[in-house]
Amino acid sequence: MNTTSTSPLLARFRAELYQSVLGLRRDGLFELLDAVLTGDGATSLVRHSLRPVFRRGWAATCDALSDGSLDLAAMQRLFAQTMSPTLVDDRVLWVLDGSTWPRPEAKTSPERTWGRFVTGGTPESGIVEGWEYQWLAAIPEARGSWVLPLTVRRRDLAAGTATTLAIAQVRAVQVARPSAAPRPLLLLDSHYDVGELIRAALDVDILARLAANRRFYRRPGPYAGKGAPRKHGPIFRCADPTTHGVPDRTQLDADPVYGTVTIDVWERLHTQPAPTLELTVIRITLGRLPRRAQPPKPLWLVWHGGPLPDDLRTLQRWYQRRFAIEHAFRFLKQSLGWTTIRPRAPQTADRWSWLLAAGLWQLWLARQVVADQRLPWEPASVAGGSPGRVRRGFADLLLGLGSPARPPRPRGKSPGRRRGQCPGPAPRCPVQRRAPPKAA
Image (cartoon, rainbow, N blue to C red; front, side, top):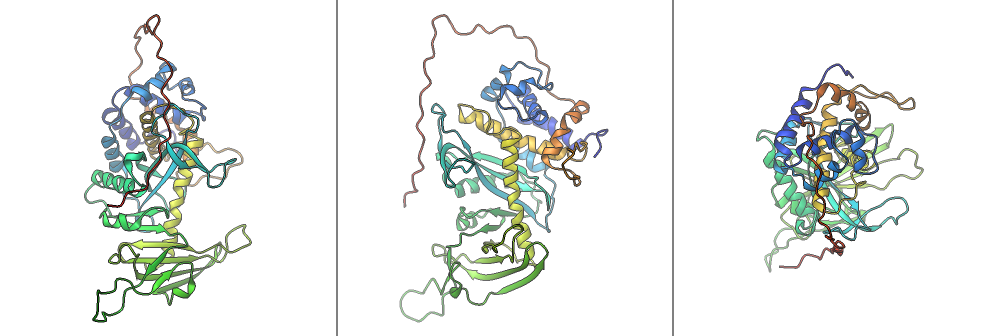
């Protein structure tokens, strides 16, 4: 990679971000993002003020996030317009998943909910107080850990279920995309309601994981002439092989890593709540996994969209790209410090999340013009590098790229609080519980 040139796309993205997206405190927000991208993993928000690119006082970091503003619709348009139609096995891939920002000790932070958070030292099914965020991102490459955020939303009580929020996110991104953009393939985990997503008519194809205990039904037989017509035919239980019958399609491949890969397809199945919505169920069975003695359990997927690809292994490659967002969450948290800062207001956390989403875009646009600063024990980088390795050379790129942010101006000293004024303790906010939806 070359450091003598700059990326026109990156320069245009930064100028549009500053002019059209950032509102109040735009100079502080812009320099704070540059400090994050050129830093080395600051443990607190104010430590970002020590970076040379941040020309303001340390208090300006907190002031920018708490009192700044972002035009979220303009940011979504910027992301959608910057996204090139990169295809992975002839499809545009989108991935949707959530991650929890743990805030168990933040008694004064409002709108906290209970979320699942698994980490070292907590139970595998640990539930903690915090803010849940749901990210919709594009997968730009067939390999690697790059993801390009399209929208990020906090799942508060008003947002509803994860599926309801997903529908709102996909619709917002579809509005921001060019009308001639190719139809995307949405990759999902098993906790999303595929039937509800299909009925929302989002103009996407869907490939989602299924829990092993799911059950479906085949088409009913011919009408017997008495009573109401049957809605369901023979049952199909994923966990019961005796109910599977003969697959509509089967493909066996020998793979040097996974051994014998068997892919079975059952078409024209439906769920009990939606008998008129036909789905395709897919089972992927791997012969082995690296460094594991026991063969893995089958992976169950559900498909809704156009015709399946001729090579069924394409389904496996598509769904494997979903896990790139897990690498993105780890990079956001461990390298960029997404959940390291401790804001009180959830709106401040929202601004910080959107700001880091724009940071991932800047690293992606800089990948071809940043020198690869490889550590001695790291392997040689593929073309474009990884987000972490691009970030190491981002500071050198900014020297030639410059910043649209205005230099700070002296404003005098703040008068501070009036004599005798005492704000008192901050109000305590209980954790909000999600009630199950009431039947209509």
